[in-house]
Image (cartoon, rainbow, N blue to C red):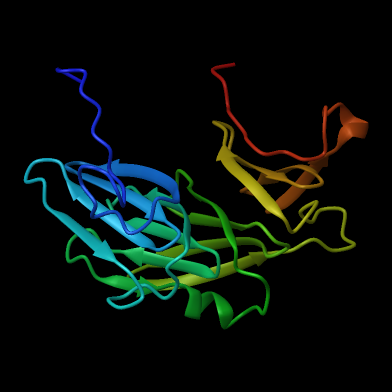
Amino acid sequence: RDTGEIIRLGREGDYNFITSDYVNYITGYKDEIYVATDYGLNIINTNTKETFTYTENNGLVEKNIKNLFVDSYGNLWIGSVNGVMLLKHNNKEIVDITSYIKENRNLNLYTKCIYEDRSGAIWIGFGLSGGLVKIENENGRYNFTNYMHSDNKNSIISDTIRAITEDSLGNLWIGTDYGLSKLNLKTNKFTNYTKDDGLSSNVVNGLLIDDN
C-alpha cells in the first residue's frame, strides 16, 4: 500500500507457495492471512513472511476448501466441498468436525457458509440440500443440532443454505434457494418468507442487517 506495488501470489507469481490459483476465500486473524483454495489452505504470517500449507497430507480431511470463518477464540473454521474442519489457533491442530456431523446425518456436506452467533454457537449452512447445523462447545464437548425442512410450518424453508446472519433481537436469518427463514433463537421456531411475501427472488445469496 505504501509503494503502490502489486505482488502476485500464485503458482507463477512472485511468491509461488500458493497451492492453487483457484482461490475461493481469504480472511485473517492478527498477524496471519488465511487463503482457501481448491487444493488446500495457505497461511501467511505478515510479520515474518513465513508461509505454511495444509493439504490432505498433513491434516486436512478434504483439500477443496470453499469458505473460512474465524471465531471469537481465534480458531479457524474450514468449510470444504465435503465437510468441516477446525484449525485451533493455540496449537495449529486440525480437528475433523465432519466425523461428528456424520454421526447424526447422512446428507451432502458441501459447506456454503459458517457463522457465529452472540452466544458463541457456530452455525454451518450446507449448500446442496444438506440443511443447517448448530454446533455448541460445552467444556470441550461438541453438541450438534440439525435443522431440516419438513411439513411443519415452523421448520426451515429449504435445506439448501446460502447465507446466515443475526439481528439484534435474537433472530437468526438464513438465506436459501427457496426463500428466507427467520429463526427465533428463544422459541427455536422459524418464520419463512418468499416472493409471495415481497421478496424479489426466492434465491437469497446474501444478507446484511442494517442499523435500523
